[in-house]
Length: 138
Image (tube, rainbow, N blue to C red; front, top):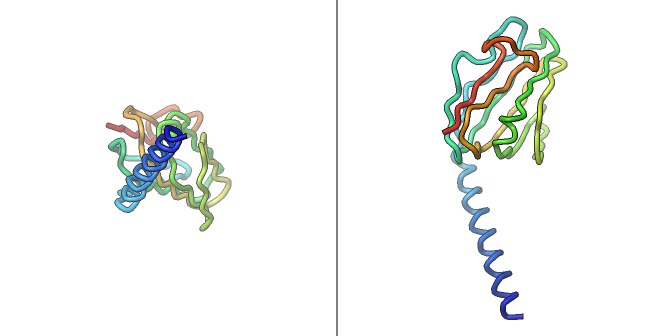
């Protein structure tokens, strides 16, 4: 019984320490250049350079000129998503694969990259870098 209590206390303290570190990290957020989605527009002029373990905010804006899905399964699998905000509704998902804009609107994504690498968000049928945003995580 004593061993069980010791293990339980260690797990609780470890969880509290981890939560305190994440909570502190969430107060120092870097806002990235927004991604604007529209007919004939480039998604991103240059790659986003990110650091694993840092907290970021990214806004995706659609001008409504066309219906467009934005996919990035590798990107989403290698970040921890804190929150997705759409029309003042906050969602804290376990995972994301893509977004789709059917009309004009905005999505705010807050996240922490967890694995270094190069990832993209873009149109599912992207044929050029104009139709992708590249994220380089170090």
